[in-house]
Length: 331
Ligand code: NAD
Image 1 (cartoon, helix red, strand yellow):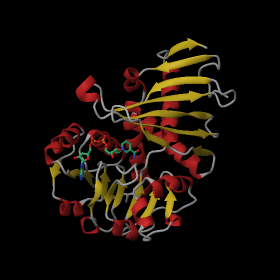
Image 2 (cartoon, helix red, strand yellow):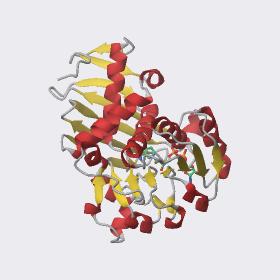
Image 3 (tube, rainbow, N blue to C red):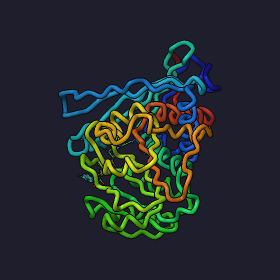
Image 4 (cartoon, helix red, strand yellow):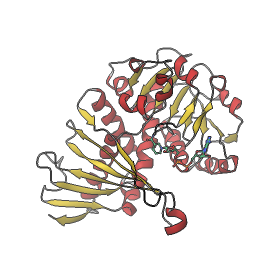
C-alpha cells in the first residue's frame, strides 16, 4: 500500500525549501478536512504526544505521530522549539520534520520539511472549522494574535469564506500592521480594535502564546464562531472558561483538547465535561449537526494533531513525485 507514490524501496526527500512550491492552501485544506473525518470515524488514530525539555539550548523537543488506515499513511513529525535559533543561528525557532513509513512493511518512505507545513496545516484546521461551523452570513472576521501563525490563519480564512472586513487585537499592538498587510493583499479592509470591539466579529480566530485568557464572554456576540488555535500545551489559555461553558465546543481530537487544548481549563474547573467536546470530524461526516441556531456560539479548539501533519506531508510527497521534484534515494 503506497498510495501510488514512491516504490517501497525508495526514499523521497522533500526539503523545506521545496514545500512552498508543492503545497497549495486548497490541498492542505482538503487533506486536513479528510483526515479529521477519518479520525471521527475511527479510521485514523493519533498516538500520544511526546514533548520533552532537552536540557540543551533550552529546547523543547517531541513527536506527534499516528496511523491513518483509511489513507494508508503512517508516520510522525519530530521537532519542537529552539528559543535561541534566531539570535544564534539566523534560523526560525520552530523546527520540525515529517517522516512517513510504508504501513505494510515499516520501511521509511519519505522525509518532508515540516516548518511551512505546520503553519499551513494549522491554518487549514481553523478554515475547516469556519466552513463547518460559522454562520453562512458571517462577514466580519476578528483576529486575536498577530504573530507568525496569525498571518497564515488570516490568509487561509479569507480564502475559505467571504469576509468583508477584518478587525484585530493583539497584546503587542505594534505587530498588528503585519495582519493589516495580509488583509490588504487579499483586498479586505482591516481595523485595529480594543478587546470589547471584537463584539462586532462573526468569526474570531485566536492564535497567541498566552497563558492567561484574553477573550472574555463580554467580547463575543451571540452567533459567533471562534477558532481557538493558540493553546497547544498544558497551562496556555486564550478564552475565559465561562465562554467555553456557554458555547458548543468542537475540537480536532478530544483527548488533546481536554489535556493540552483550550478545554483543559473548563474541564478541570468542572464547567464542561469531556462529553461536551465533539470532534469536528463528526460534523464533516454528518453524524453531528454542528451549528443548530444563528445565535449559538461555537468554538473549535484546534490543538494540532500528528495526523494533520502526516496528511499534508502525504499530499506534498504525491505532488513532488508527480512533478518530478522529489529527491529520490534508493534504500
Ligand atoms: P509568535 O511568537 O509568532 O506570536 C505569539 C503571539 O502571541 C503574538 O501575537 C503575541 O503578541 C501574542 N502574545 C504573547 N504574549 C501574550 C500574552 N501574554 N497575552 C496575549 N497575547 C500574547 O507565535 P506563533 O508561532 O504565531 O504561535 C502562536 C501560538 O500558536 C503558540 O502558542 C503556538 O504554540 C501555537 N500553535 C498552535 C498550533 C496548533 O496546531 N493549534 C500550531 C502551531 C502553533
